[in-house]
Length: 296
Image (cartoon, rainbow, N blue to C red):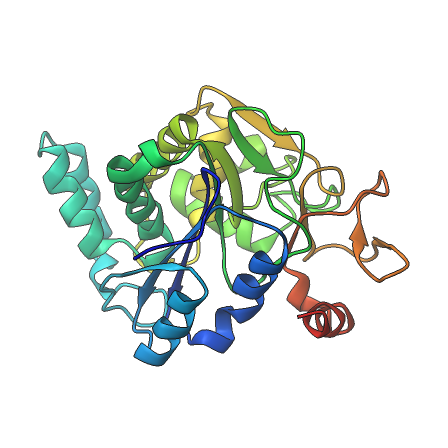
């Protein structure tokens, strides 16, 4: 399809079983933000009318098939078998085909993004990977003091890996109890928003896929890609990682926040009184959500 993009910036996201209304705040706020790059949306089980609306807004829609229930993949249940196969000398292409069949959706999306960039990465310089349901753009997501690398975004300092039931579960099931104990005092980084230049983001996506293949147990854990994401950062599996504190970077991760600063027009500001381009998990706060959506 023909797009109206005028920059080499790319936003990558994915939607399964949603419709246009589900993703409209993401797409419309991005369009209103002044962003002039490309938006690529992978879709599974999305109706034709929604796809037509998205296409009319300049979104490149790429259908894929996911047969699982919600985000979960029943074929992941015999995980010890798949983990063993991933550890063998099976050709890389065969491992990827297997991963597409047995990965839960939240893990599989990184492989979809990687394969897209392997074919089209030369068309882009800067990439933003984001969840679609709970992200709102107050400004162009690339309008900040950018530098090459993979950009990770910390959650609130009050939240620690060892204090959060979900993070504890992910770390224990994926890497073992001793690994959790070793890193329980760390602030988790959120897997729902990640920036990078093309070369570094491809390194990150490769690391995400490879680490998922090695995880101890993913059989009944469709929501644990954040455990993999944090492991990639902790173990320095990307060569150029940049870590941003919450309330101080281009992304604000809001789920654990109890307060934030706003401007006269109700926009959310960071600690430096600057407009935050990307709000993540804003939808947990009904008043803020209502205000932001009213702007659309």
